[in-house]
Length: 365
Ligand code: UD1
Image 1 (cartoon, rainbow, N blue to C red):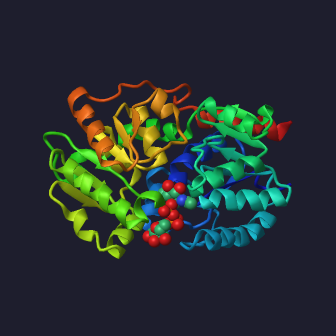
Image 2: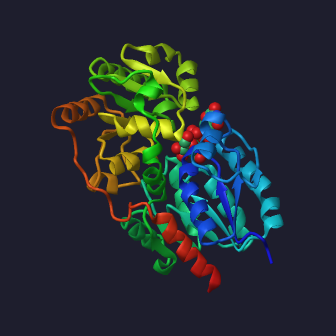
């Protein structure tokens, strides 16, 4: 009998907070699981620090694929994952989220007849220019068991012909991690060296649609400077964004008054910053959900979101990269405090437990 029932995959930063509670729930249940890290993200600040802070078991193997074009990165992951899958011969492969590691490993497993379990299934931005949207649609098509974070995801999956019996609404594993770690969040004054008296905004920016095109990035950075003139902006900058700003000759726009640049932050540092922020400006998927869970107003610098519950029930507002819309929303938040929001159904810290129960039952059936 194989020692590993479920081979779990992570690769990039947003995967780590999702896998942490799943590995813990599998260990408790038990489901015999092993973890593969593709190495899509490899910097200490983008990867190792999350394993330490979230007490994720050391990966059984690291494929060390690193950065490359989408085609090369996806292909390298597939090539390196296949022999690992052969050696482990698990009953299933579990993937999370929507990054290149997710689709690459799902595709290898499905072609070998190994059932795929997808956590965070059914989210759709309906924008195929987004690489993650392609990863989502394809991963869901390949999956045997699909776990969703919001009820509307089932409608998206049904529309794509996926049998509803395969889909289980379990809630949000990322919010499991958030709830578990709130008491350990690093205080703001420790991260910044002081506590900004009049409040502050947190900014993150890394989507290709915002940072890979010089005009869009320039307009966004100018808008941020206008905000920073009124409220300090804390900006932990993604390596991709820093590289783009330097390449386009825009690096000086990162240094404007009121903007505090930080390197990529650890999970507990980021949680501390976001929890106490006046507002968050972001193009990240995860932060839209985390701000909703924390009741912090969020301005999403995108035209669409695959996480609509953060708009209908949460604290999120979409502005795209349009300066007028961003500044209007910023004003509304300063004057009225922004959307109040409520915590979505099943974002209760127990999603991973539900997943472990269903996976155990499925393995035993
Ligand atoms: C990936 C995910 C995205 C997720 C984001 C979080 C895909 C398609 N995209 O985008 O959904 O929101 O991670 O960060 O999988 N780099 C480093 N150090 C690292 C990793 C990356 O410096 O540890 C730099 C490299 O210059 C690299 C660039 O960041 O070329 C982009 O990395 P990549 O993994 O291709 O995509 P992300 O933009 O991080």
